[in-house]
Image 1 (cartoon, one colour):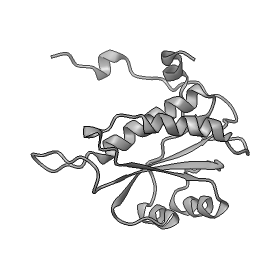
Image 2 (spheres, rainbow, N blue to C red; image 1 turned 180 degrees about the vertical axis):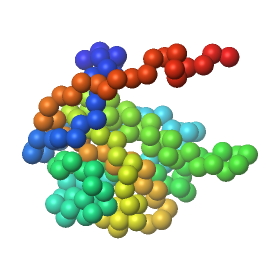
Image 3 (cartoon, helix red, strand yellow; image 1 turned 135 degrees about the vertical axis):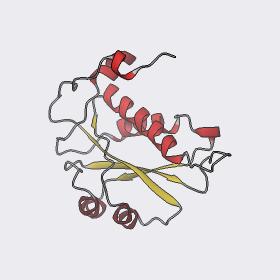
Length: 166
């Protein structure tokens, strides 16, 4: 699939087939995330691949948006490893995680997999499910799998509504 075809065909998948992802495909998706650019190349991201019934059931308590996916990727960043802007100390780990997740979403689309960005969750419960400490910030939950059906892309605003030349 050509790059702009991938972008045009990406959609938020909310219904997955009841099967696990082929490990080779999943590794390609994870590799796309690994290759993502990060601020100062600090690479603070950590990706948790959740497949066990125990962890998946705990995640269903942390968010209602798991869509019964058999695999869920949790993208976090380590606050102690992320770049912080010098003049005000703003942590850019969440930006890094978003770039990592976007590359994995686009790779998933190119490979025929579906994904959905989920940012509505109870962070403390996600941390508990993963057994991680407070140095981790949970940024994105990414259910991933084979889509039940392909949805058309939602209507997007015209460029003139979102771009301003100065």
